[in-house]
Image 1 (cartoon, rainbow, N blue to C red):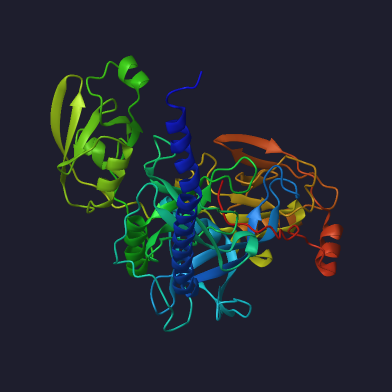
Image 2 (tube, rainbow, N blue to C red):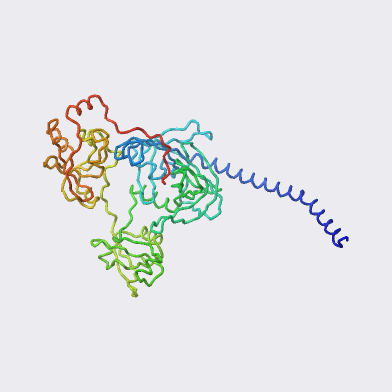
Length: 495
């Protein structure tokens, strides 16, 4: 039996079948034109952005860790590569702090052509470091450099197309296209920093390069990737523009970023903390501890309080606290609202400037003349009161801090480790590197050497496998002292 609607179906399908190729061709042509327009935009952006981006090559020293080619604790030389970009025409450029960490020499390669095959080379100086946000400001002697204007606002949007620039694996002037996967991405609830997440390809060496939109506006600085393979897996993170701007202004003016201190240990609220501690708020920041000598304690803050506002700004989480803290002025009192049990209390706190205690001696300043204790095969530094305070104090008084092992007399032994403090040699106190050397030289070949060391607050005696005086003199004259092999790894991104 003939279906009454079959001719209609046949006719309709025939129309659809005839129309489909025409419609497909039109759609395909439109799609190609759209892709061409995107390609033209990315070409234009690359032409404008490329000259602002530089490659950074570093030579540095570091203390080897477990898993490195050299034994753990040995001071080794390494080379690294990263990226950066100009933020002023007079040679100031931004990169990541980890790109130039412990660098003894920093070279900046500036492209002179689109092919980037003959870059100009400059030696850079570190103008300032913002370790909290992993940013560094460098200065090279150049005028009229093309640069990103940090006063121009550009806000990332989820799903927005972006371009990543840098030197992945040392391949300078590389660009990759992707999307903004998320804005204000927080990697850990107790880490107040936020990042722009992108799926644009990043690899080691991209660190310090710019993340831009299709108009060429700066959105952020490429900082790290999350990866199980060590390569790009579409999880790249960039520090946002507003953080770069704040750090740049402070680093250029003062060489450092001053973050006022409240003297508290904050922690994000979680359902378990709220339930277990019987808290009566769902938002805020738990005061986990209070420095008894800090401004928080002076203002009446107690462990267990939940901070809900600071300087009249609501504090819902660690991000809010971090943002408001940065805007505070040391010495200027601010109002703080806390929940203590079921009671809401208003307190007045005067933030303090961050303590300007010197950090431990960096590897870049370690020299054979000043730091090598040859007979023990280690690099040491005289323990100063300021340095002792950064270690939380020491029990044994003056001494020499072990910076690294030199790979000489202590190979295969673990009697001394970086971070130990040597207080005495055979019962005689040593308070400087020179005193330690002199005391060791007074011990005859084959004589016992007993060191009193302090490790993590505990005192103990160790008998190291020291070089004899004859071996020491031989190695000095033959210049066989080693600091480890150079590591040609591309370096760059933190994992």
